[in-house]
Length: 501
Ligand SMILES: [Zn+2]
Image (cartoon, rainbow, N blue to C red):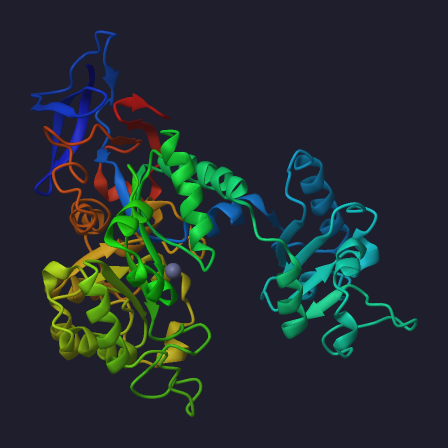
């Protein structure tokens, strides 16, 4: 049994000094203190600092997050010389990597003092043996080294717009758009072993951020990703609790399985495939989120509706029959209404746990149609999308969390690797909504990642609170007042009663 004294806990909005006793499994007791206790030496001492329960991220592309951490980051490189230097440093530090390709990205020739595209001769000397593919910041253009060009025997099919060439006809190493898409097909997909190493690294990172559960959206490579989870889980090395969504395109395959096969394939000790991810529109950034009236900065364009209510209804019925959950990506007001209608016509109600991911633009009338739906928001969007008023104009308001939270069950997530997976950043962003009337206070923001997230994860009475019988997962911050949260760092992390940080 271990004890943490002088822990400042938030109880019904009030801060209370407490002593927490825990075993490796559970919190055994939480007792109120009269004042600060002196440390006998046998206890952990939180010295009056705020202590939070372990948190859950309800929207994360965990493998994408892991690969982003491992791949070469060339963002904000200021010159070709620095570009070369950073590549050389990465190659030096990753000599032991078994990956057969070197993948990186984030460069932008407009930021280079030379104002030119890099070419293969800039990097051939630094990456002479392995093939390399380094994407431009936009993801639509990449640089290949000569070893990679050797593998791309199809480049001759593309004209010099997409594959620029030297006077002698040889590619300079830049590939664009459809030529780049072809190149990606030649990059071998990661093996299950690689995926499980990536997952292990990213789960260590998540645990150190205070996360104990993650809702994880798998890619089209979901079978291998699931196999990687199973591999870790079987070795008892999957510590994070994972709740998985797989692409809707695999619905027929799941339906065709016997229920025994389905149960075996979709469930482990610490992971569970809970549902399917469907897209009903795109994003504000690309002006593809489906709106009821056109974009303010593109009057002919109202975005792209990818699934209408009829399609949503059909999917919803099939998913409900499997006793699984549908999580539909909907950002624009038109898409959100189509999804709500689709769910309603399929007879979906609150206990089915169906979700809308993002749910960025809704007015008060629309919000009333969302009562039976779990709304999964990513508060960091509101602080990143500084251009949102250009897209939507002055009248339409996105990220109306306070209003949504009054009517619906709201949960929070990061959308990492698009945004930082640190849950503190999400909680802070929810309290700092540029739209002041829609700001959440600290306790409300915390609930999105604690009690409410625990309910949708079916971890009620285990995660989300610091209370007797709950899992022994705690985050000790370096602040003694929740108002200072946005500057806070974690001082100590306890996971299953053990000090992790
Ligand atoms: Zn996402």
